[in-house]
Every structure is written in structure tokens, then in C-alpha cells.
Length: 358
Image (cartoon, rainbow, N blue to C red):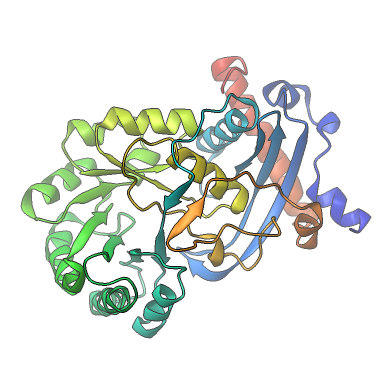
């Protein structure tokens, strides 16, 4: 480890402003990581974030840069609660996961299922601004064939993720076509966030047979329960960090009364391990979780990244390796930007809750 790299990746708690230290009371180690991605995801080509250590272990706060300090502070509060709060006993020792298929050509999509580590469920990204619906249909067809070839038609499941890209009229046309493309495995399990507005999701749900899942309408909503009240979805996508940690995320999910799917926000294996632990607290049969995303990162902060085996991820603690964090530091300008962001997030948390935000 070079001294300069260590200075860029480890944040000295004693050097932080007093309000930051108050909000992060109990955190004894704070790292800043930077991980290039090996595939472009919605204009994102790398992931950066904070790794926090406390008496309950490691956690991650890596809000995307389009989140302002107020919204980002929920990620920080969630990581703080995981690192310092009590832990419940898991109900499962492993959780099923889906393979996530980015916007790639059909042949690449097929191969990603084949090499997914035995995943029986695939989440296919669609509606990229630079692609046509016909390309999305071809991608879904290829994924369906790959699932038939690997786990069989009865076990295979396909869900599509639209990321709120369509209006309700276009979704009425597109979702049934994608459903037909998945017919080798019985059609779509659900369409995730086809429209941005809750009222449009509700309208769409009443007009098509494919179940609807809500992600952004819960994760980035002032009122996460609006989806349930409007009967706008069948499934709630729960992302632990953006919703404020394990307990708060599961509480929000349970209050919807919908089926829950725990998913990632493209974290390192530290954040993914938190998601797996959250999913392991769900009683009964667990729907395949969107947590098998570490392979989208060109590298990780742990020596043995979380990768599926037979379509499952194990419930286990992971610890970042300092040498791996130091291997790809952010530059000094980005570090300063993160320190400023941390300052603003903590200022907001202290202002709204006196620092008691776990």
C-alpha cells in the first residue's frame, strides 16, 4: 500500500467536523472505495462509496451522484444502522438470486445466463434510450432459451426492468410483447417499474395480465405506501441502502402488503452481503433476489466476492481488504467531493433527528 493511496482511501475520523463525528458516533473505521464496472449501466461506469465499520460489522453507503445530500443521507443512515445496530438471527442460510442481464445483444444475453452460476431467474434490462423494442424482445427470447437449456422451462423465470422509461400507452403495447417473448418459461414473472407515476402503474396493472413490480415508486418516493394504496403493483422491490437500512427497508416493504424482492443498488460485496442478510430475515419462500450483481464490477473490495452457486448466495459477513481498496483509489478531487458530501449528509441527519437516525 502506498502512503498516498492510503491517504485517499481511509478517512481519519478525528479529522472530520464535529457534527460528522456526532452523527457517526460508534463508527471506528471509514473507507472510500472506487470500483470500475465492466459494463455500462444506465450511464454508470463506476461505483464509489463509503464503507463504515462499527460494533456490528461493515456496511456500505454508495448513493449515486444524482442523489442530492438529503436523499443520499438515507443511504448513510442505513449504513450506520447496519454497522452499529443490533442484528437479528437469519431464518435462512442462503437466498436465491436472479441473474441480471444488461442491455446487450441477444447472443451475449444467452451466454450471461449460461455462466450465471445456476440462476433459475433472470432480470432483463429493457427500454434503454439507444435500443428498439425489437432488440429487447430478442434479448428476452434469448434469455428464455438459455433458461430452458440450463434449468428447464418449469424452473425458469424472467422479469423485465423498465426503469420507469415508458408512458402508460407505450407500456400497454410493449409489456405484452415482452411477455410473449418469455413464453418458453411461461411468460413474464413481472414487469418492474414500467412507468414513472404511481397512477400510471395502477392504470397499466388494470389493463394487462402481467404482474407489476414497483421500485423507484417505493425507493425514491416521499410516500412509499402510495403504491399499495393505489393497488398499483403486485411486488415491491426493496433496496436496503436507499431505504435506510435493513430494519427500515423491511418495515416499509412489509407495510405495503406486497410480495417482496430484495435487490441491490450495484454495491460492492460489502453492500451485497447486507442485502443477503436482509433477505434471509424474510419468512417462508423467498423470491429470487436481485443481489447477484458483483460480476458487473471489474474488481471488488473483498478477496472472495459474492457470486451465486446453484442460483444462491450464502448468508455471511464480508470484510474489505485494505490492499484491494487502496488498489483503485479515487483522486484527490473526488475524495474532497465525497468529504463535502459526507459533511452535508451528516448536517441534514443531525438537523432532522438530532443525530439519532439509526
